[in-house]
Length: 371
Image 1 (cartoon, rainbow, N blue to C red):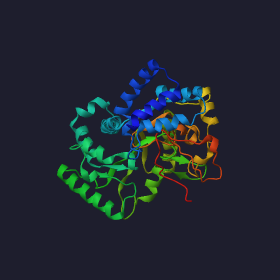
Image 2 (tube, one colour):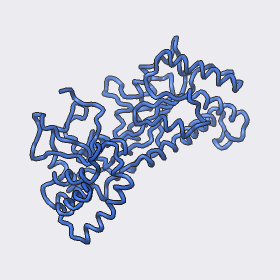
Image 3 (tube, rainbow, N blue to C red):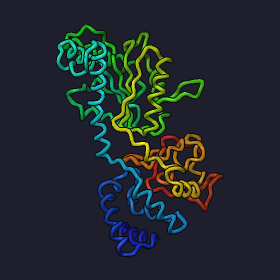
């Protein structure tokens, strides 16, 4: 009943005649059933149409609402759970491809010969056994990754946290030693490859960043937090650190690739490599050049109370002004345009009541300021 009433109110708000309403709700019904109503940020009893009504109501005129609706209708990239799981499923073949290339370089043979040469096949089998898969965020879906690759990856090769305790490191190496004995391999019980797996990067800064003085990000934190050498050595010297994302913006993919090359000179004991299941095309970005009317609308209706110390200021186009019209099934990235995910905070001093923001896909913040 709520949805029926909300649809009627949306049509009135948008001034749609019967023909237009029939066309738009046909599309909306399809997307709501297939994707939007399954957004995990919605609470019980509050699904898409309720949020759509509130979201459209914040825009002050019908032309502004049409501009905002066009953003939803024409520009939004919504990645469903099924689509994200498909990207997870693509990850292992891509990782395996990087390994075959590494074996080919080591033996100085073409990649296609790795499957033909007995020596290359044996080295590849040992390399796969000496690989550790690490989920570096909640969105990494490392449990899904493991289930999709049952038989190719042992449960003892997968960890769900980037911070690995000394006891866990010892256990991983002991179980690796048993696997190597079964293979009749003489290689030391240290990991030759570590795959750091994450779901999405929009700016690249969460993975790797450099402020001109010090390195930071998940890659650097993994290196610092784990006893890689010494008494609890985990990774073999010269080992490969593969930084894999299921999804990335074009800008982030470029940033991560360049920064990993620079970081390798800082951490010369390892080989750092980027990998992505899919990179979004660069032309999806919203900015003043690609869509000046939409950018002006987003900026004009911006409420600074949505800002935190983690997002920085002026984020109507999202964190780092990435301008991504993107929503993931489990959460809306803060790199996405703020109107999709941001909720105004009336208790903040910089709250602008005239620009009160109601989200279409409410974001669950990983970082927030204490009040």
